[in-house]
Structures are given as structure tokens and as C-alpha cells.
Length: 329
Image (cartoon, rainbow, N blue to C red; front, top):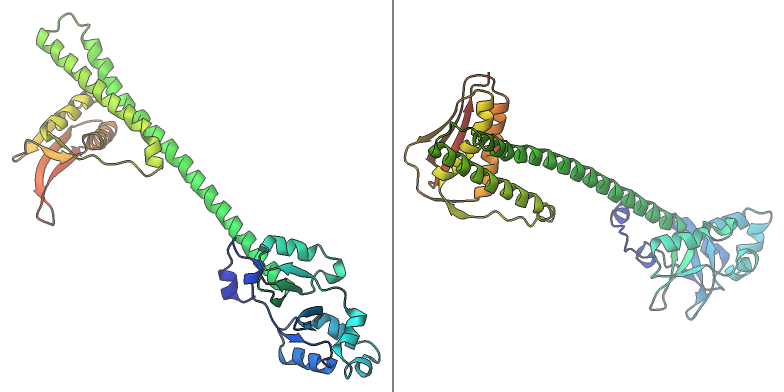
């Protein structure tokens, strides 16, 4: 089979769609004519012998050459009809329907006696047509199908491994995100036990606990949306939110971690900030918490700052810009 044919092999391919030959001779055709036909067509593996309404046999190149190599065979057969050689070398022709799959066809061909395993087979078309198929072509097609199957298995394995890594990374990130609001909740809840706190400080602590509790609920809802992420159906929301309030909430949530490392955590607004913007508050908050969390984690001295500003993008549209700065000491 040629390379282009191999490139077009698919699991749905049938025996009838493989390259075949349709050379046919009558039983009375001289053997010399058949031998000349093989000489003119080096790739011809055999010819069908029969009349228009009947199949009488198949003469393959290998069987013809093998018989003609015998003593006195040239004198005995070349000038006589091909049917006389058939009487000596031929058995009932091997046939298979054109609708047979490649694997079924290869199995049927190789299930024949060893002496005939690589003899060509006759493909029976639905319209009654007869064509000759080289078994080597059939086996090459089966080999290509096996290669495709191995490639599919390899890709599936790589996809499964990538999914496993992604899930592990996702769980690691979620562990980090869950700990952040929990740390704030526990920290401010512990502060409430301090009898020296004023009512105003207690109210501030309770509000911080509530905000962190709401953020924790958002994270849990995000985890429950993992099935949507895997299905590619997770939608980004566009809600009208207060950028000032969102930035203040993020800083409030992260302040406990910053205080634990004795790092000043500052919030700065550069220029005029709109009262509301359109954004996804959950995703935006998660991004800012991750970035500030990393800044706190890798900063041992100095400060961490969240700066919020409004800038104009290349299309001339205003966008909110958030910059996290740390000393990196």
C-alpha cells in the first residue's frame, strides 16, 4: 500500500476500501498471456479467472512462477489455457465481503492454511463486483490501525497524567486559599476573647470574621464547581462591584498573616477610583489573595502594598489595575 493510502487508514475503514486490482482473464486465456501480464505489471499479485457470471479461481504471481519453475513446465503450460494450471495449483478461491473490517479481514486471511496465508483474496462487492486484494496490503492497514490505537492510548495516558497533575495542583492551591480566610477567622475570633477590647474593636473583629466566612464559602463553592471546570462550562461572571470595598476586604483578610510576620500591609489608591466596576468578584479576589499571600510568604522584612489605579488600555478603554509590591527581603 502506498503511503497516502496508509495516511487515510481509520478504524472505520473496510476491506473494500483498500487498494485492489481488477485484472481478470477467462479460463481459456493462454498461460503465456497471464505470465506476460505479470511481467508488464510488477505490482500485480494475481488475476481473477472466470467468466462474466462466474468465478472459477485465482492465479497468484507466486503460484504461477512456482509452477513454471518446475521441470518441463514451460513446455507443458505456457501455450495451454490457464485453466489447466488451475487444475494443478488452484483450490477454491478465498473470498471475503467488502464490508468486512480491517481486523476481521486480516484475521480471516491469516487463519487459512500456512501455505495459503499470503495468497491474495477476492473481495466481493455489494454490487456483485469481484476484485483482488493483496494480503500484504491488508496487513499493512492493520499495522497502521494498531499504530493509531497505540497513539490514542498514549495520548489518553498523557491526558490522564496531566489531569492528575492539574488536580493535585488545584488541591494545593485550594489548601492555600482555604487556610487564608480560616487564619483570619481564628485570629480575630481569638481577639474577641480579649476582655480589654473596646466595643468598636469587637465590631470590627466580628465584621472581619463575617467577611472571611463569606469568602471561605465562595472558595468552597468554587471547589464544588470543579466538575464545571473539567467540562469547560465554568462561566466568568460580570457583576457590578465596588473596587474600593473589594480591595479593603482583601487587605483585611490578609492582615492576620502579615501581622504574624510583623509586615506592614498597606492599601493605596492612586488617583480617582470609580464607585463601581464590572468584574467577577470571586475570581478577582482569589487572584489578589494569591498574589498578596505569595508576597507575604517570600518577604521577611519591609512591607507589602496593594495599589489600585485606573488606567487606559490600548483600545482607549479604562481598566482597573492592581499592583502588589513587596520588598522581597
